[in-house]
Image (cartoon, rainbow, N blue to C red; front, top):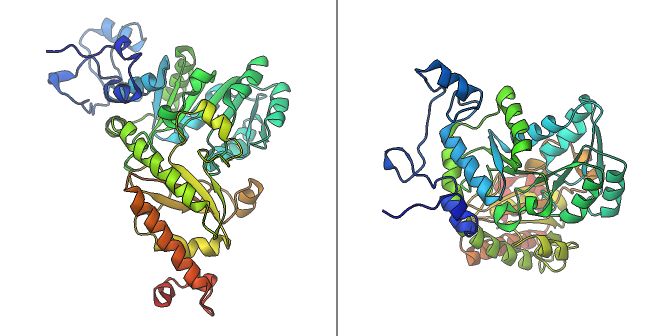
Length: 425
């Protein structure tokens, strides 16, 4: 039998190989070829002294699945090797991972610097929960690196980055901002969900802690929640301790599904990114679109930065529609090969406006203050054939144009009377 690759043997392997073999080099019980789901809350020991050593971390083993679980540990090893990290910790959701990291490293009197463009749930932590803890929060204009550097220079405990941002696809210069953070001794945390480890490795750019919502591209099938955090063993020991006590641990079945999903990440992303660029190019020619956000477009304000720090530009595109929400309500229901849903990163294409997806927790006023218009639509491009996705979007826009050209039925009327949309067609 051929010897399976050990951890060292994967160091120089490609991302596709690490996605398949990471965390699974040593084989599985019963010679199984796939990671088993170990559905046990606790683990028994006849020798009390051995039990005690395992409990204290002096000997390998498992005690209680809130603390560690064999299936979950396989997932942690897999993402650790994909991100080239020393250690990783899994959580029950992406927001559990984000909040746990922030609560681990911030305390009363600390200051965190971030940007206005971040996922809506993250923004709520900054605006609502951290101030209750006595943490000072400063949110800067995302494109203004000078302002961000100036705020960092005033001193902060944590610099929190999200790049590309959700849903505006803005890009932050990671190395530039890491340099500013290190000058004041700040810890740098980055949400790498949109880029995935295939396109961007923030740790290699100087970031201290990397976060993923594993619900998205890593699992890839829209059927599981999970979050992952990567970094040095010293930092992850603190994050792991917080998880053990506060309890947002990932269950083994969810870990198994994410492990299975990661194995096809390279294949999925290859098709998704190809289609994303094709859709972005088409949207740039569509008269009913005010603007298109995709870092792979040369017209993107930070395209050069994205090209320097990313290996690919991801599978998320967002655009702003002429006519705002009235147009959104007519366009989206006409799509045949898409879900209208509050998720992303799945094999199926998913459309949704920010007000019901990334920033559903925010009020209209808060969204507008963050620069997110009601006409902004986020597209998570799936693995369908590119030509089918393009044709689907084109026919939906053709329908909207037909409606606009045939008074007296208005977009607002059709948006509020769905049945009328079919009559008008």
